[in-house]
Image (cartoon, rainbow, N blue to C red; front, side, top):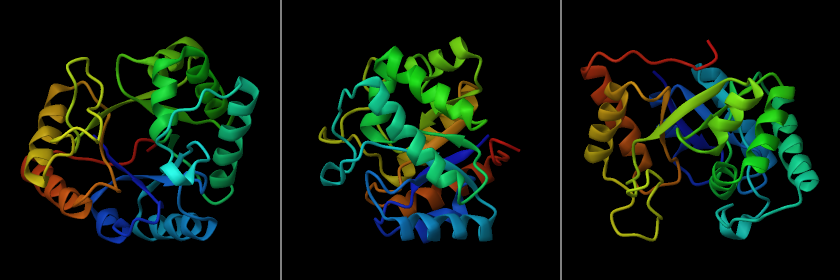
Length: 225
């Protein structure tokens, strides 16, 4: 099993989260953060033995990469390739996980998903996605390693997608997040469980999840090991 978190986005909780996760999806300085932030986050991951993954997103800092854009496929390809390449220049990478709206666009649109997966494969990398949707379907179609992701700190809608952050109760408290993480781990349906580094109380949530899975005897580690 694996615990991942989205970091390097300059929201201030990374240092407390890093000791409690196995893999860091490091912002590629497009949707948030900065070049210096990405470099520092990668360096800290190396110090702590945390796996580094590329976390590309739409170049939309004003909205933290959470507004969906339907870019022409060549433009989308350039956006993704540039960001993965930038992070690959800093570190060996374990996999790719798209950020925010880019993740959701690729989950919903097969062509966008195939662009993400194909470019990731050019770097020799698998791709993380939520089971039952476009990213993992593209991985299967193109013969690329896909990693099944569940979410510890977010509520789900009836259709299995994440509840919008604007919806009350969409972000779970640390205790509830730890319980959900254990349920998802025990289900056998996931390779990795995510906690969002930019959520309120993310550091406390990361600590509680780590405590809960340690108490349950669950072993975790990097995905690319």
